Image 1: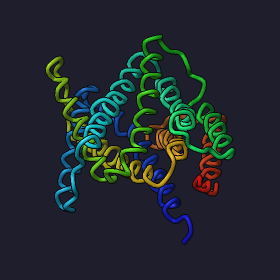
Image 2: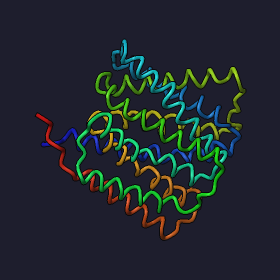
Image 3: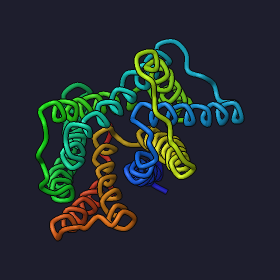
Image 4: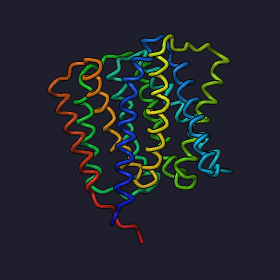
Length: 292
């Protein structure tokens, strides 16, 4: 079937967005059980790294080497750990709506950097879908934009770091493979988070519900989410992958309304529909011909 790798890439990115979108739900249950950000991230990356190492051994996959290995290690230890730390720190100084909105500046950042640094040829439809998704995102998250300057700074930092992570992944993942790349990323992030215990003592979940929610973050919102994203990134451009990923906050808002009884406004419903339309526009856009 023509373009089947691209369709597979779209489905993988959508699966990743669903898995990532579940994380705030699991996180709210984890925090209610007494875990702090440091403890949550240590558990998240450690369990995820262990699972991926087992899968690597079981499948006999080859570990990346040389510059590719170093690049992936930087993606995990600096990029992914840094983005997670910045995002969760932003939540401490600004409300969740503002932190989420600032994080989801990254599709615009990735699109601009892709065209500028990586010289990707972007269809007009991609630009239009990006603008549509950004509008839908603003409507979905709502108008609660109060926050302290430090929270805003950490939110912007999370978006910038994640943008660089995506761009690096678009070049390194095809050279290493999705499974080895995801494993190195998570292992590196775990090492960095364990290193942080030299400066602060983490707080762990206090009950079984908290541990179950934290483990769900590790397996569903990390192993499945990261692997699906990197595998999709191997089949799509960085700009397309990041734009499709804006479905993540739609998932979070809908599940929060269902599981946490968070009310939705008419504008939020409209925003969610707008993002879905933008994702559909991206998925139906034919790929550009390769330059001769």
